[in-house]
Length: 382
Image (cartoon, rainbow, N blue to C red):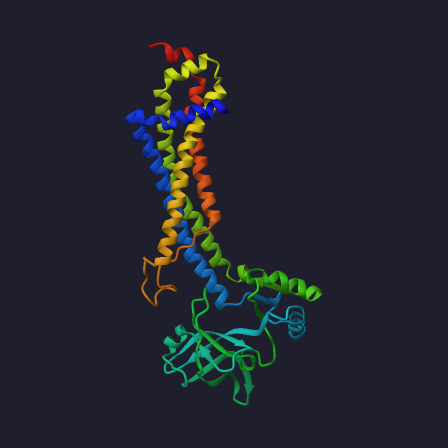
């Protein structure tokens, strides 16, 4: 490889003597650098938004949930709660019962998701339901349950009047329209007896793997229940984020494909320019495989330089835009006030590797044609 490396270096740095070839080489270099830069900045922007969304999921929603494998009620919820508290003392547990009711405020009744929680003391609604009902804290709500009870006048729907205690932030991934109630009130409305539909758990220590720790803690008690983690609870949203990343990578990565085609033309032009030199080298004993490696190394040299320049430029630009918050967003519309950028070293490595693979593939075709060329053809008109 020493001879091929020496020749590739001489060809690469000696292109300035040939103005037209040097210009095409510079265009190939700049195209690769711009393609890598655009891909790094785009992925950093995407990772900034997605990391913000994942942080909101962790901060505002349950990290794990224990629910029945069959039916809508947990069997022996007290034993489950006691076992988790003994094995994982730092985990927060909330007993939950969910259902649907009609809620009436100042106007007509509207359907709402009712959630009874053991950590809720007063009735609360999210902003969506509050806007539909037109109510404020301190006003009275009427909750009408789908459950019926038998009276001397016949079966009537269970209903109760409650004083609204306040508002609760809308949980990420939900459309809204949620009424939070104390667990005892929700049990009376929805079931008429003390039952628990699920247990929500939170832990600041490794929330993304809390479900695995809970399964280990429950042991034999895990039979008959399903333990879900953050990825299970928000699977549609997380799958959409992953698909978005793949599609953005493919779409912006087409710029690198175009730059690689430009590099292919550049290597082919250098091969045509050095036709006589290559014929002499082949006559001196440089074999076809060595000639093929020579031009692959030549294309890789341009690819490595362009990929490194683009990667460094993309990382620097992303960091500057993130720290200066140069791209502002309307307040109150988005979670953040400026476009976030987050550089993922793994993604930067993947982008650089993708650029180098394209550069090697683009150099292989002209390199193969050079290796198959007869040396006599290069000397025929000399």
